[in-house]
Amino acid sequence: MLLFLLACKALAPNYLDGSLTESYDLAFDDTQARLYTSELAIEYVEDPQGAATVVLRVTLDSEVEPKAGKSYDLVEHGEITQSGALNTSLPDLDEGEIELEEYGDKAGAKVVGSFDASFVTGDGETLQLQGRFKTELELVNL
Image 1 (cartoon, rainbow, N blue to C red):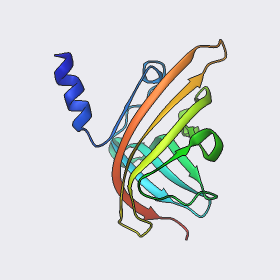
Image 2: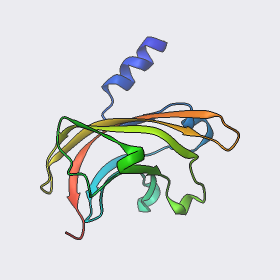
Image 3: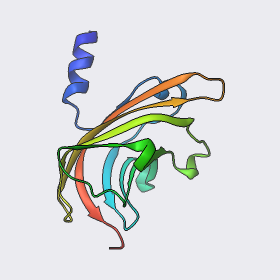
Image 4: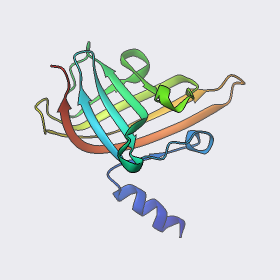
């Protein structure tokens, strides 16, 4: 059964997994990639009854020009946050990296990749989070 679950996750285009998901509600329905003037945001969105809430945001600062086939340090060039609407905040990001397997900077272009991060809680515990995303780029206020 464990092999079946691992195989399903490997085939899933969008997922979040790791010890952080045991302590924080990171259930989501869809992902979106949004390019703002200030950042590229990969958003994991929950959409109950049409009221979309961003559950988790992985951002890459505009100082970095995103390119397919590249990896970026999230501590240096981005962040991972939860929506303020959820009234929770994640522990401090200790290490993190995002990889863009496919990326185009035009509206509707494929954005495919993954990220891996570790967070340190106030009591020194380290929590892990991994995710994958496959979506299309939306341009916002450009």
